[in-house]
Length: 169
Image 1: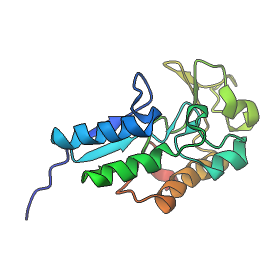
Image 2: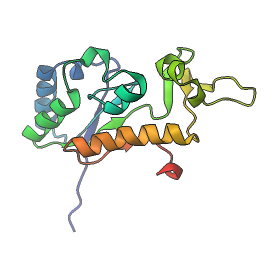
Image 3: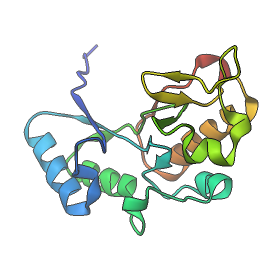
Image 4: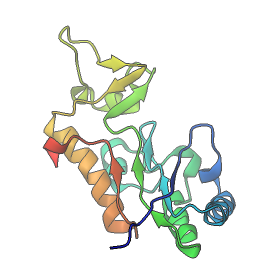
């Protein structure tokens, strides 16, 4: 049996502009293929927004996509350009149940405060600056699962990387 080696790289919006234009995505996919990578993990969920047009986000929070990506579909652009050069695509739900970072709730919990994870004193659960959704809440679980299902149903992807506890799958 042949061993398949995975040589992957994660694409994020933190300190990177690769996902900010179709041209940058195409150039990045060319570079990755030329340098021996065979899998790309583009972020599709971070900072409480998606990097693809999301009906789940639109219906739940009134925000369809990252404001810097309105009018585009960065995930589709990655899929097209990655396939062109023979790369596999595994979208990455980077922050999982994080609702915000140092925002004292952020847009998700401002609109759905009942989704907040709380400590034993009733305070918003925070760790390392991240503020958290309640992973045990069935509505929160359904929301995140719907984001994942949106991606796998609407895009030609080879898998999904998500930080979603196994007990809700």
